[in-house]
Each structure stands twice: as structure tokens, then as C-alpha cells.
Length: 120
Image (tube, rainbow, N blue to C red; front, side):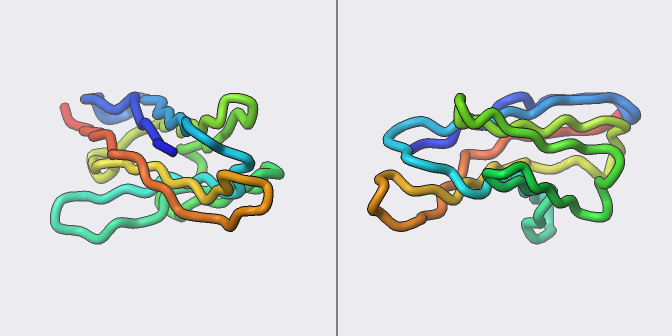
């Protein structure tokens, strides 16, 4: 199983970006998909999460600006980021908790990270 993140880049303050993360390989079911970020010199932090039934939660710092969504048919999670601020600059990582087989156990998988830079 692999998670491939994309969509990062350079954007001006107030701008928008949409991140995508597609899971591929032998997948039976994905329970939770999340976005984390890690800024230089800081610990990795949870940005947003969504479950298989569509429940979502967000870090206080991004509420009202970021929206997480997923396409279960494509095993893909998205992060729509609006009203971006310089403090949103970080490497963004996707995460999935999934089972590869019906009778298997859940395991954690991480994407490679995509850099988001918010600067004028």
C-alpha cells in the first residue's frame, strides 16, 4: 500500500490550495484518513481528520479555513485550504488507517509529504 500526496506549492497569503492524497495497492477498507503538518523546528501536528462515515474534525488553527473530504471509491482524501496564512507554511503529510484484507488488522500508512509555502 502506498499513499501519494500532491498539490503543494507556493501561494500568497489569502490564497488557496487543494491537497490530494491517493492510497493505492491492496486495500479492503480505509477507516480514518488524516492530514498532518510539520513546520520547520516544530513537531508534527494534526490538521484535519475524516472517518469512513464522514465524520470530521479540525485543529482550532484551521477551523473555518480548511475543509477535509474524501472519495471512498478512489481511496483519496483532499484538503481544501483557503485564506492561507504564513503560519500555515509546512510540509503536509497524509495518513491512513486501513485493512488490506477483510480478515486482517488495521495498520497505519503515511504519505511522503508535500510542501506548502505561504509567502508574498
